[in-house]
Amino acid sequence: MERQNLAHLLRACSKSRAFQGGLQIHAALTKAGLDSDLILSNDLVDMYCRCGSLPQATNVFYGMPHKSIVSWTVFMAGHLQMGFFHKSLGHFREMLCSGLRPNEFALSTHLKACGFSNSPRLGMISHALCLKTGFEAHPVVGNSISHVYSTSGLIEEAKKMFKAMPFKNLITWNAMIAGLALNGDFSGAVNLFDEMRRREEAFPDEFTFSSLLKACSGLRAAAAGVQTHAAIIVSGLDRPENQILAGALVDVYWKTGLVSEARKVFDRITEKTPVLFTAMVAGYCHGGLVSLAMEVFTQSRRSGAQTDGFLLSTLMGLFADLAMAIQGRQLHAHSVKLPSGLDVSVANSILDMYFKCGLAEEAAQFFNEMPARNLISWTAAIDGLGKLGRAPEAISLFEEMEREGVEPDEVTFLALLSCCSHAGLVDDCHRFYSRLKREDRVSVKPEHVACMVDVLGRAGRLEEAREVVVEERCSFVGSWQTLLSACKLHKNVGMGREALRELTRLEGEDSASCVTMANILAGAGMWEECLQVREAMVKKRMKKRGGCSWIEVEKRVHSFYGGDDTHPMIEEIKATPLEMETSMKGDATTLVHCNPSAV
Image 1 (cartoon, rainbow, N blue to C red):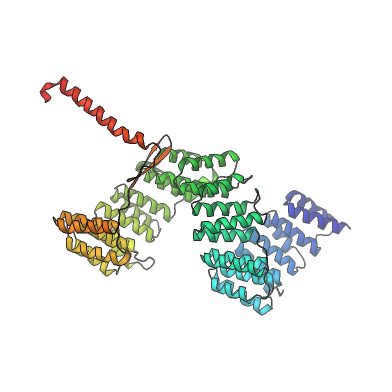
Image 2: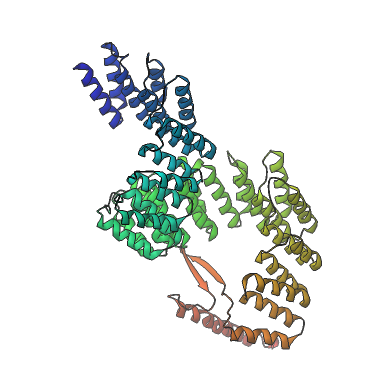
């Protein structure tokens, strides 16, 4: 009776994560001489693992005189729950060496660890072991095999495993739908969900709908997202405390432009998690809605929810894009007080904000004081210096980065080439471009070619610029557009026509390219041909996309587009220049009357 009571109490402590209670029960069973009992020892290992005390779990496990397959499975699962999948894999090998034959639960735990390792080869070896031991057709093992293939990017192998399974339960369908969504086959995920409903082999749960919403989000399918939400309501899963579905719904509504629906879902949730707050702030940031993003961020702070690094980086990115230096500084000051403020990703976003706000000195000081820097940090600093016209400093920083053993990637080279291009440093740009072409680790991208074309075009070396595009066999529209712009600068009609032909071949007739060509012809005095291009644009109803500008007034950003009269204060805005003109004329008249000799 005492043994049964202790086992019951241990399992209760394990379920409720009651570490102190578990310690007392451990002492009680040791005092009763039951510390060698196999079942109680297994329960002890499980309790310590669930309470996060792996050292004590390890002591109990290796102190056991006999270990069953359950002992090994519990021990491996404990390491997996704590994120130590490599150790879990090592313990599985250790179990095999001890002579024990794995069962379906040990294999399932091992396959989950393989999935976390993201190693396709290890997954295939484990699949072969399941086949050899005869457990491949077991639902628990089959589901895990399908999952490990999906997470390793072997989606075709996952499909084969799914089709081969004689019995499919809800977990089977969920694993396959999630795998398809994870690997970008959003249409396949939606189709498989429809098949599951038709065959009525399983009824969807919150995990099924979460994967389906991810697929709808990837397809930007607003109607499908709304229909899925309706199905969730009918199924009774649309509960205010359901965090998983709330986050997925907010994401799909944001990505399909249904802002008000996203806010309705957000407001219904009673206990909001950091993930949900982050999703909402990210949506507002993506739409450039600063005041609403700040409102949700303030709500997050007042609720006591932990502010994670992704939320800080997202909000800082918005301030960077809109050059909101005051708010950026305030958020930087707030991040210093948070544990997540130490994340290198947050530091990188702060660095980027200072550079985009034109605060080069503060950015440089912050960069020098960063406790940890990665390649993104160096690249952001190089790019920021380049955009602020400090090309020599950017080149010097690149060389310092290499001295510290940090190897550049394609993005770093792009920042460096762009910096040299904007500064007109033809020789430096050519030197780094030639080096990039010799690199084995990185490859030349179309954007790199465009930088080289730009710097040569600005210098008037149009033939060399054309040779770079032709030599790289570049089908990147940006390279030919850059060459076309250079032709406008230097009034080269012949090469401009060639660039326009290539652009038309690559992307069809584009209004911006046609306008540039018309300007080239006008600059060369070829007015008749310029008029023909303009008339052709009118006949084809081609319009150049209007530019956009914005201004911040009292912590609110106002955006303006060319030809757009939809701003709520448009009448006052239009009246202001007239008032200024009248005022200026009045001042000029006063000056003339005061000083007649000025006439």
